[in-house]
Length: 169
Image 1: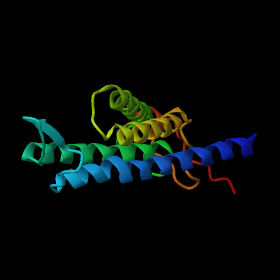
Image 2: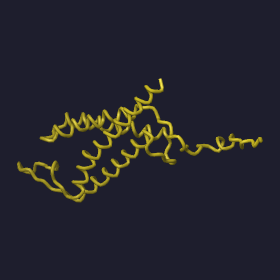
Image 3: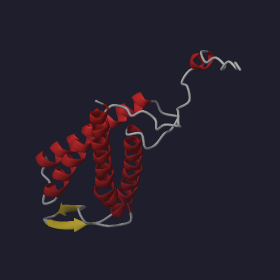
Image 4: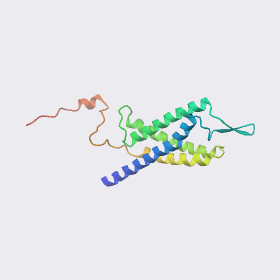
């Protein structure tokens, strides 16, 4: 039984690492490119001709999205137990993991239903893969902390319940 749980934990970690790689290679890379002034994928039709440009507004939005995607990577790392932090509860981390999955699955539907020109073939499948990997991570059980590291108690009662060890010879 323990071997099965250990194997499942490894599969979730592999899914999480693939998710992080997908986020870094896809959305983070694209938004950093736009933030730095790139124009691929930012076309709009004006008077029958295609105009490509990167305005300050697009750069600001791209920077905000990059920050949100870095936060998403931290959520994934916390969800699988590779990042131990004390400020956000496991329940909040789980909520954000489900939110990440939902955002990318909605993006998948949007990519295939909205009238996007040629980039639908890229955004839709990438969003689908990221959304499915995020579902695997969000649906996993919370990991136990690695041996030797324990999280701080979450309440003063937990501290009060701890009794000093008796020193019997």
